[in-house]
Image: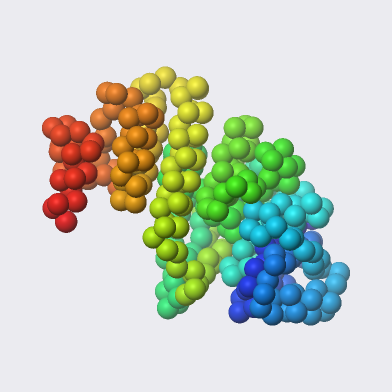
Length: 305
């Protein structure tokens, strides 16, 4: 079974050779590698051209003039011939048995639409941290971004195309928007608890406060869409964990945009909503909320810091 790999490439001269070498080292050999140069201004294109020439039976090099990873991934998707597709960021690495292991999982689980996998994130100093999939509730895991990450997951090609591919209007949470659309289409998703992907942080990858605020707005908007979808399928009692996840996202947004966070709290949570203690919301916060409500509690917590 052919597995295609799509790699968006923008100014990754320092990383792309290592990324591609991690693919050339795969024990699974039935691969198609599609590199999408996305307006690089460094030597990325020359590195890609050399490697595509050296491995012409394996690597395809294409161009995407519209700048942005979603455009590049969708361009690569047009070239995909595999039944499954691995989207791999150009600065990330796969362990040699990553694809072989996940193909085995596909065969053992009647070929699902998505494999959501654990992964390691490697800091600039080389230290690694394990991120694990939430195995309890896929919708809750989606809300809390606990369903893997772009480079760790594996997708059925036709299911990705039926979901419309990547949303080109998004600058973040793109894989979670894709998985949301796939799950709305009744996608079958399984978990992979082997962390065989290394997500590498880049020193030049720090985002500004403005970008952080914009990312949080997009993060919240996706969670609002997920909760609205779930409201159409569940009664109010069953919705409490999902409302809690939305509330936790609103609280994070409050740090960047108080007006928008207050508006979201009033519009998208039930009037009688009461938070529970969670990883993001402490029991002391819950007690304060019962007395003072959302806005005043946030102000009190800010003063206590």
